[in-house]
Image (tube, rainbow, N blue to C red; front, side):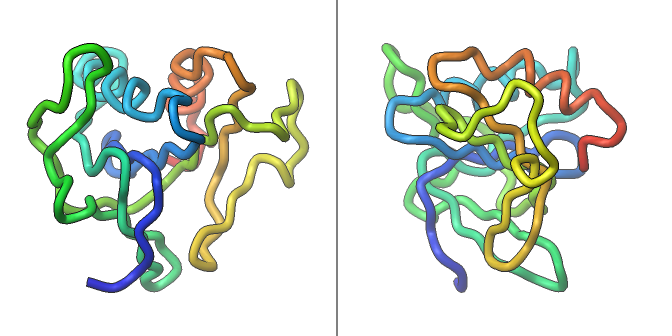
Length: 148
């Protein structure tokens, strides 16, 4: 399998994946679980791609996301432990969420709303340290021009 493995979580939301990055303890797994639980209610179909580590690969201008093989189908539920859940083996990234973003702007510039990974540019949502990311992410996902 090609492409680097990064510390991130990814959830398929409808046809595109949300890639969740952030430092240790910033809530990547918690946000991934919240997205999965919102599937079929506030959001369309959702399914885990990977938690804690995912593999990225650029392909024809798209960023493919796969779970790290050893962690496929596993997610950490803080206070409960590691749990096995249904997962998708592959997704095309449509949005990057950066938790505890030190460059957070209340009214972001165009440059701060983009992320480049593996030479692929994607829409980006920066979330300030200590802020709950679910509300802004839900708003971004429900906005037609969010990239998803």
